[in-house]
Image 1 (cartoon, rainbow over the protein chains, first blue to last red):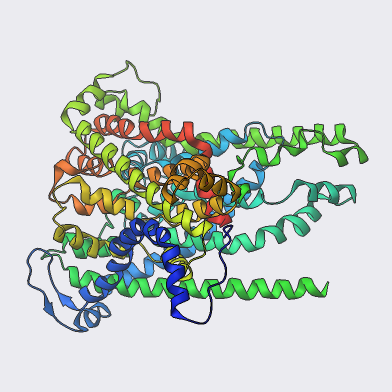
Image 2 (image 1 turned 180 degrees about the vertical axis):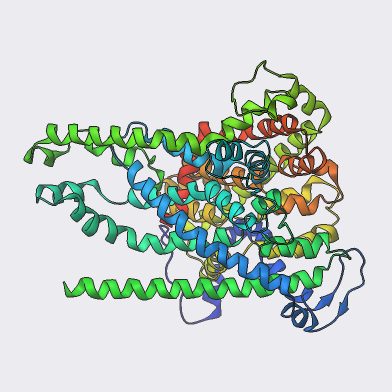
Length: 321
Length: 305
């Protein structure tokens, strides 16, 4: 952009060719990334479509073209719809909680007089950098019904009469992994909010204070309007990440008991690589993946559309003022 | 763009210095009120933070107990320090091998992804060439793609490329994921550098490669650090990909996967698992504490883009 490249001459292909030749090094420089993306991003997308039309265990080369059979089976599979619903329930419950707690913490920690702020930030971010498999192990023990400290504390203080089997009870398992997932990844959302808050120039607050604005006014008229455009993208990023939760669930419950905490990614993994009594089915699992991927895309596009609408409405309202 | 390069803590330090407008009202009073408020918030947050990191404290404490002690009490202080737990899992549980695998995969994927994202970021940030828009659009599209369901084709691809029995398959696949933010950071950074640097280098007879390698890349240290940390976090902690690619290859497992299988085999050995977990966790914690700034910037960069 900073180099003085002229706009390509509109007339002929020769001009375009000169442009391409002139920038040949640019194309060379893009090769590594484009190869990696082609192999590990774009190829898989097309192949998962193709696989979804096959009956294929992955162990042999027997790939039979079965057309839409996998999809037909899928929509009659109660376990699939269970996992599908649980993934979206997960998002609907966990995302608002993450967003709210992390925003509150970010506002508290974004205080210039807080000398301990970096220490707190580090502590809240610690679970984020921890491998999910380790979180799974720690939580398995911490939440153990017999010897875990949480249950011992709950029972000895008389809060509950009987120890709660957080992982093994089918009514509790999903909420347990949800709680742990919120605990693990809340720090990311908090850093997003902090990044957004730090784009607010402190001079705005200074000027407003001099004009006699109270804390509520500062929040209402400076912080909220500046955070609003970020809120859309933060929600999108957090929702996307929450929707694809896998490691925590696999490490803590493997989707159990009796699939009570099975979310989509765990379902796909199980169908593709573990099998349910029988052989694994890569084709069938691919169909589940494609279906889920499409649903996610639709939701993401919807979110972007809503965010855009809200943005333009706000802009219109701002213009009237 | 330069916002991202500012450490998060420094951005709001303006108030501690002498902001020119402060004299208008009564700053000392307001400042002491602010300090009081900060103290109250800190006092409220300390117990919350302790509860927040309690599982880690518990893990380290358990790793230093005997199994009998671990199963019997809430106390966090072990009766006698059982450092032998660490020696035992290190030699028995194949932790050393998983550790080496993880280091190799992480280091390899960092080199591959940082070099490739710096290169593409450089040309996207500094040059307008035919096809640029298409590339940018493709990359932007990739941000919104769900990552999880690509695992089956990747599994198949690695096997058909004949990479299933070496660490290369995992390394490449790790390098191939989640790099769009790094590209954006590099492109944004390079686009802001003055082109006079390049002109001077050209006068000295430097070619495209030398200009990139000797002039511009050395200036991009902060972005490079952020890109390294992002990839480090991604590769070190990744679970699904190495799990799937090492289902029949126990010797290629990473720490995350090894620990997971260890849990399945030694379910009642709490102290062993706690020790193994602590060993696996230490490198990333140390890296995080030293490179905290870049971790936070990298994550924050995702939003500001």
